[in-house]
Length: 174
Length: 122
Image 1 (cartoon, one colour):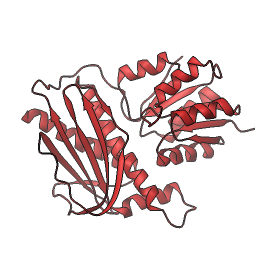
Image 2 (cartoon, rainbow over the protein chains, first blue to last red):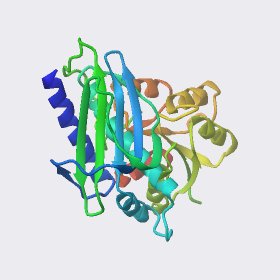
Image 3 (cartoon, rainbow over the protein chains, first blue to last red):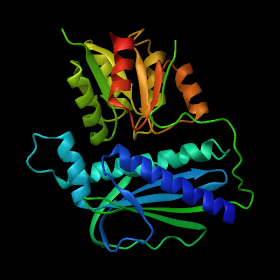
Image 4 (cartoon, each protein chain N blue to C red):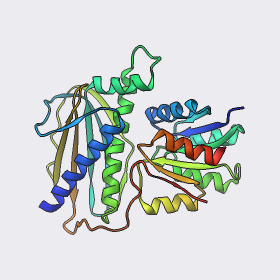
């Protein structure tokens, strides 16, 4: 299980780094966690035969605002609803990357649509039933934190199988 | 006259990213927030000449929408490309069997998306 935990940790870091690049965050991985509590959270659940759990992401409003200002240069102010939608999509894409890594190692899971919440003091504690991994990134526009809270069955193994199509790849069928 | 591309995604952020890329390349866009909304817009908007569709969405997912379009015999030849975080070979096979013409894994590169649209929609 220690090997699996390290592999999941590596995949979570790769997923966060990849998504950070895609969302123009110019972020770098941190070894020390960011300070809680947070003011927003997006959670995506996943379930499969031998692995299930959830992935959460929280980000500084400034970071979300910076990304959205580039998408909506005509808007003087970015509403919180738009920022929460973007946060949900970030969580969706981080878990999507993890899911593809799992899938190419024989573990198939199904994802739920993201749930996003806005709060005053959100503290993440985890279910403490299996793996609880956290990845923190810092950027010029503030931090982003991601958690993987997951549980595997005793027979869970990660064994390379059929390769998934990777992020940014395109297939056309004729 | 610019061609119209239907963007089906439950994330407003992704719809805006795709819209920006397509309008910059001279296309007109229409949007739908899930598979059911996408299906309704394919039924009711004859100007749509291509569809870019997410997979995981509430109400009706992208694969279900593809099957509904094929099952109803709606707009034969209308190219539908899936744009999703999913990269699993089994899902890609399902989408191809249901009539998808392409599969792009998010995050997408605008140039690649435009190349796909130009190839399939002209």
